[in-house]
Image (cartoon, rainbow, N blue to C red):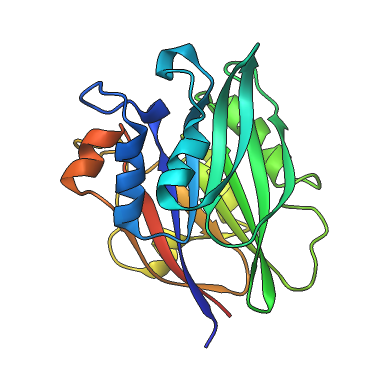
Length: 241
């Protein structure tokens, strides 16, 4: 039997809830409810005036007794905004960088997590709002600089994030030709994640490469989660073969 982990992806909306309350501790509590081993976050603020000038990635990680890696897709003087990865497991930052963007700047984060005899390669991103822009970003991500890079033999790939893309979109289909959608592979009914109070769109995704089996997925929709952000966390229980 291989190593078992729970992966979560969660757009935290700069820790502003649907009640307009700013509360990073509440986001940390939602993540704790999920009991995930590795957490991918999108829309994280660091040193932004609108959210009190704190480092949200580090603050949430400290609440959870985890470490954080953060990449600022948007960097205006001291203010930063982007994606993060949180875990209590050992990590190595492989790459953090921008993606082709015409509107709001977007980026991605690549972190290696040793698990047993393999090295999990975890990718975190948040794609643009326009279809053409998302396609350029996805083409870059599946290219040689990211998912298409030469990997060690013991590598296992997990790709996560808010893709702003539903399953019928060209961007989603491009990725699904190369990796398996965890929700689909788990069987059963797939669940939407946005908006959190009445989820209608399945735009947050976890994709898995070869050598990883998904045992189940779930959207965490506790009362607290429905208030804490405008997205709900998506979780996947995986087994690394």
